[in-house]
Amino acid sequence: MNHDLVASGPTPRQRHLALLGLYASIFAFSVSFGGLVPWMALDMEARGVDATVIGLVAAAHPLGVLLMAPFTQRIVRRFGSGNAMVWCTLIAVVTLVPLAVSDSVALWLILRFVSGLAGSVPWVVTETWINVAATDRNRGRAVAIYAAIMAAGFAAGPILLHWAAVIDISPLPLFILLQVLSLIIIYALRRRAPDLEDSGGANLRGVFLALPALLSAAFVSGALDAAFFSFLPIWGLRAGLDADFALMLLSIFIAGNVILQFPIGWLADRVGPLPVLLGCGGACILAPTIILLGLSAFPFLLAIVAFVWGGCVWGTYSVALVSMGRRFSGGYLVVINAGFVMVYTFANIAAPPLAGVAIDLWNPHGLMLVALLVAASFTLLVALRRKEF
Image (cartoon, rainbow, N blue to C red; front, side, top):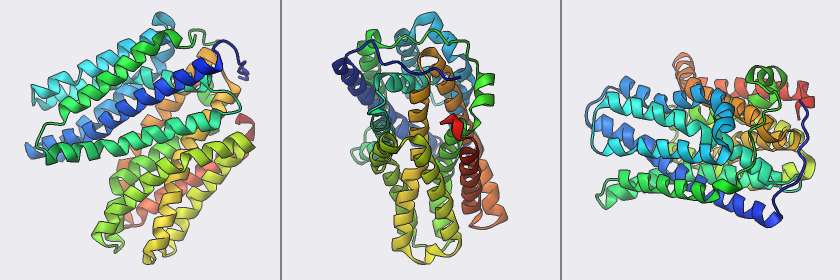
């Protein structure tokens, strides 16, 4: 499965312009997505919808992504990568409009599922495109900027939701406009999209068998981010932290997600992906271990650990993308990236319920035990299968 990437085609200026456009599109979309999910949950909560139903609506989008990812390469082959991104993004935007005129929970669930189906293709193609537009000299930094922008957008979405509430306007038109902006940028870039139609005979089954360690990076980042977004403040409260600090801890974790990506990407460019992945894995083992040993009694140190931990959790995702781009190219890379997105999305869906059960069994430290086991399994797999990187 070693298809070395050959730098050819676009000029450095064209590569830079493509990256800038993709970054802008990603930021607009992620701000919208980061605010839309809590807005829908709050709206349904205010209407008295059961929490279980709210959870089902929230899960519909990632489920759609998970189910569509295996078909991404076929769609790209049929329409071309640029046109596939445009049409699928347009479908995702259209699904937002009925949310403004209907409060039917069943319709919302269907729309979010369709949005996930459509959104899978731009997600996979965007990450593949960034890898193709980058070079071996700057790939770590290029992917790190992408990861930081996406994390920052997700964090900014709730802030936009808050300010819409302050000035007493509906945030939904803002979320729709942001996704329209993302669509316009993709439309303008579509002719510069790389040729990704030829999969080189790759298939998802082969990818899962040949690259389990690489794909496990998607699982550790998806599982820990999803579990912490749901339960880190709850863990803090139950561990005896002040209520404000317990909430702030999640913000500190997210800040690490964003701020540490560039230095992690720079390090991957300097020393290669494998040592950085092992380092991130080691940090993700050390953090819950020292917390279980009583770090919650020292809030300042706990904040530092949460910041570094956040960077390393999201760093596993971005550095694994760097490794992919170094070894694979073209449509082959699309198939691998589709498998990566599938694993990440599955972890997003599975981790919160698993973490919740763990907290119920060992209150409150079950969350830290789950994080420790996931990180240890990932790091061991990477150490045993170095050849994948």
